[in-house]
Amino acid sequence: MDIAAIIVAAGRGTRAGGGVPKQWRRLGKARVADITLAAFRNHPRVDRIVVVLHPDDMGQAEDLSGAIIATGGASRDASVAAGLQALAGDPPDLVLIHDVARPLVSPAVIDRVIDALDHAAGAAPALAVTDALWTGDHDTVTGTQDRTGLYRAQTPQGFRFKAILDAHAAHPGGAADDVEVARHAGLDVAIVAGDEANMKITGPEDFARAEDLMREQMDIRTDIRTGLGYDVHAFEKGDACILCGVAVPHDKKLKGHSDADVGMHALTDAIYGALAEGDIGQHFPPSDPQWKGAASDIFLKHAIELARSRGFEMTNCDVVLICEQPKIGPHAGAMRAELARIMDVDVDRVSVKATTSERLGFTGREEGIAAQAVVTLVRA
Image (cartoon, rainbow, N blue to C red; front, side, top):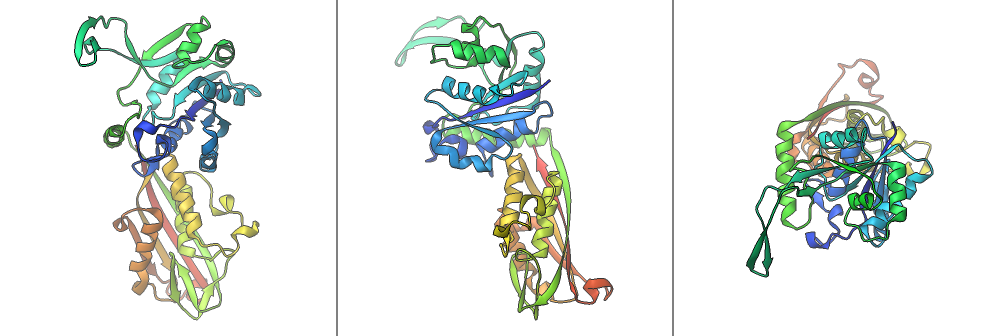
């Protein structure tokens, strides 16, 4: 069963404030769009993801790794139609259509929608209305409304792909959501249980509420990853070694395609390892001349941003530099501070220390420096 997800992110979201569309604002240390994308990228039943962007936001596409990018239209249903067309050349069996402003969608809600499509052309999560409903005229109650059979709609809304593609093609436009499009085409849509945490960020106050919910979820379900990194660089003639972002005076420097920061390379590889994302060489090939002499903070920033785009935060890291010379101790504090700055974490989460190999091996002969690093990433 091939399942695709379309994340609709072409709106302007001005009511949320912040000076930028709400999908590009930070929720914790990751953007709303990154957290939403991670919910589907990390779901084992979702095979492909399309993100529909406003034409003015195409510059954001390079940060949405692994997603198909489509250009949105003037309305929500036009943007969904663009996402469906992006899949039409190689159609999936099922498609999930989700609002980017619902970043806290749970795996259980996604599963319920998918499971319901075994017996229905469409399915959507919803919450039954439990509050009393009034009608009103400005600030005066004019009547009451029976709440029986009323639901608060959520996303993702799932469909058999061909059915919803045809339904959008036949719809005159202006639909509030994809359930409305499906019902206009005569499709039955099953209701599955929604989740109060699957809230839609609309106003400025919703960011604080969403962050509170994220903290609660961290206590309930936690995904912990550990990664190990190792790197070696030989010495060559020079006057300083770049180690963990700090220039340490020495009568040699480290040899490498980039700035040869052996400590930062080991730490970067540890983060990639925790994410099962290979190593630096796969993301920044040494055969590519643009990385010759590059500062290693480029690599580390990419790794930590990739972790955050998948909903992870680094709880701690430990870097060990193995060498006889230069002496690391006087510079360890500066190294910790620089790594913490690059990764945007508190310095008390970063450890840098050194040891020797007791004059054994290439480090003992002062032919180079080795480094090991271990990190722990946690995702709610």
